[in-house]
Image (cartoon, rainbow, N blue to C red; front, side):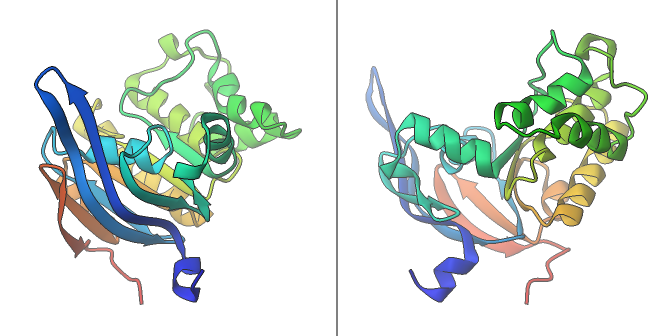
Length: 237
């Protein structure tokens, strides 16, 4: 492995994804190539159906490519079975979803603790309390998701994503289900925590203004990587 590739926490080469339909084979992604440095923030933008969410699923090891290769922090995902990919995700990855994905039967504190407890962290509760304090929810520890507003639920989801200090954070339209005020609050919180933790951020969005807050922007159109541009916060030397 070259010195350059060692700097890249994500390396994508020749990535193609096809699925079978009644009409035949459908290509969702075609020959995608790019790399992401450790600590970098990258937005993936494109219209609905362009393939950006499929790309995120592949990068996170939630789906398998038809062709090509993804190296996630040194692990070649195509060589791993589902159990091994799940282990990589548990050890290195955090997620923030558009639909929050909280466990309704667990309190805010328990939702945040869950990934750390599954990983065997003995200080899961203290980590969760600290993170909920950082996102302004120290007064909501024992509340269930149904007792929280949409913005509060997404703040719980962000706290959960950062527990265990993941190397890579994947965020799929994190503010899309929120009103403008709460959306901007969530976006600021996400970038602030990401900067504090030195996490690599991969953000899928259709919002160009949100994308501009990242250091780089990958534009996807009809399953192809059209161009790579810099966001307004680009400061990579």
